Image (cartoon, rainbow, N blue to C red):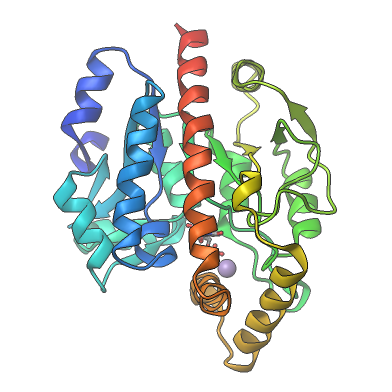
Length: 307
Ligand code: PSU
Ligand code: MN
């Protein structure tokens, strides 16, 4: 198998690896399908800087021209932020995009796969996909959950959005044996808000504790990911009742327009942004940055345990 022929590392990642630094992965669907230009590119750059300030090396992951990119240059990031023909890439899309020489922006699922290939254990994002509301009829369950069940990467996120059925998402993760950890919280955060009606499995006070759990899990051969749920900062959180009614109307419109499959999540995110008049975008940016702080620290702590 000639795995390396599929992968291109950025200079920064190669250099960091040579110097024994911790690396934190970042996804790219959030750039191409999750936020508008130019805020997407600016946020991606600022998030990378936060990872650097935290002592780790950022590796934004995407597929460009049929090559797996572990770390993007400024030009590549700029391209990804503006291009309109980038495919939202989950597990099932990777072979097509690589063999056809196309561009793909990786979801949580695909970023986990490629991070593991590149031996990166910690990955920072905004929110994970999950079981959609009404999934008992539509069977819309994000491939992110399956990936969490099998791929050895910790995903630092702000919980799951209430465009999803958070309760069913937790049930699914339980069935699949995925630990859901709360970073300094008992309640599972719901992305725009710090709390949901659901509890995390285990509250963790520090990144040391989380790093130790990761090492234990993987040393035992208990394959699969871990959800590290980090609540949005208080000052950036949105109002719960307002968000609930906005999400209800976004879901209703998606149903009326019969938006399904991979289009569902980007449509819902776009609608929420429209209906909050951009407030959701500001919150989204703040929570990703907050996750980058925790992710960098976790990457550094995990690396120091392993060596
Ligand atoms: N949830 C968010 N923001 C996002 C996504 C999910 O709050 O940007 C993106 C992530 O890339 C995630 C993907 O992996 O959407 C899930 O898509 P789907 O529901 O189609 O699996
Ligand atoms: Mn889906």
